[in-house]
Amino acid sequence: MLAQIILFDGFDPLDVIAPFEVLSAGSDALGGGLDVRLVGLETTGPVISGTRGLSLAATHVLDPEAPGIVMLPGASGPVSGDPDMVRTIPVILAGLGATALPALMRRALAAPDVLVATVCGGGLALAMAGLLEGRTAVTHTLGNDVLEATGTTVVRARVVDDGDLVTSGGVTSGLDLALYLLDREFGPRIAHAVEELFEYERRGTVWSARGAEPVAL
Amino acid sequence: MTGATQPPPGAPANEVHGIWLLTLRTPIGTLAVTLTLHEEDGVLTGNANGAGESVPLRDIRRELAPEGERLTWTQTITKPLRLTLGFDVVITGDRMAGHSRAGRLPRTTVSGIRETGA
Image 1 (tube, one colour):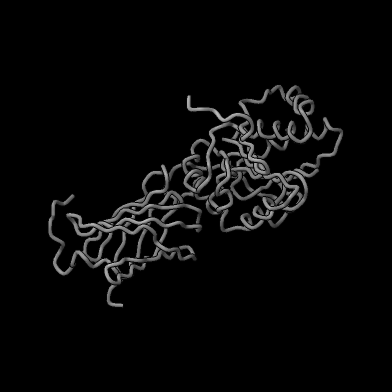
Image 2 (image 1 turned 30 degrees about the horizontal axis):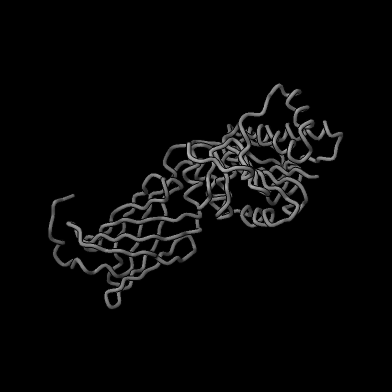
C-alpha cells in the first residue's frame, strides 16, 4: 500500500511531518508493506513550507489513483493581515483552487481504492475547490465556519471518518489522524506499537456515522 | 442611515437595471464582479460574472429604502471558491453599497458603481 503526502507551496510542516513519521513507524511495525512518500502535485524537488522558509523535498509526483492513502496537509502563515498584500492562510488555501490540485484530488476521491485524508486546512482547501459538497468533515477550528459555508457538514471532532474521506482538525490532530489510519487499515496492534514508541496516545473519539444517533444533550 | 427620504436628483428609485461593477473585500482578497440586472415587466433577473464564471442571481427581492432601493439576492459561486453568498445592498442612483455573507462567516463589504454611457 502507498501513502502519499502532498507538498505544496506554503504547506504546514507539522501537518506533513507528524503523519509522515507515524505512518513510517507503522510501516516498520508492519515489517514493510506500507510505502510512505512525500509527493509534489506536478514536479519533484524541494517545496517551501509556510513556516520560516523550511523546505521538504518531494521524491515523487502524486499518483491520484494509486491504491492507498492520499493525504493533503494545511497551510501555515499569517492568519490576519490585508489579503491583497499578505499571503494569509485563507489566501494560500483558496489559491490552491487555481493549481492542479482540484483535478488531481477529484480523481483521488473517485478512485475506488484510494482513501483521501486531510490535516488542518487541507480539508478546507478541498472544500473551497468544491470537492466536499455534501460530505462530512472537519478542519482547523478557525476554518470550520468557512467549511460549513462551502456546503460541507461540519462535525467538530478531532478526526472525522466519512468513508473514503477522513479529515482532521488543526495541526497536531495529524498525529491522531495517522494513528487512526494505521488502526483502520492494519489494526490496533500496529497503531499501539507506534503510540508506545512515540510516547503519545491518540486523543478524542473518531467520529463516524456508525451506531446510534444521539438526541440533543 | 443618512436620514434622507428622497433619492438623489436624477436617480429614480425604481431603476436598478444595468451593468454594475462590484468590488468585494473578502478574506481571500479583493474580488471584482460584474453584475448584470435586467428588468422586464417588473420582473428582475440577473447574473454575476467573476473569476471566469457566470452565475445566475436567485431570490432577487427589492424594496424601497430611505436611501434609494434595497436589493437582496443569493448566488452560488464555485470560483475562486465554492460558496453560497447572500447579498444585501442599497442602490442610490448609480452607486451600490452593502454586504455579502456566506453562512456564519463575517460580512464582506460590497460596493459598486453602475456602468454608464457605454
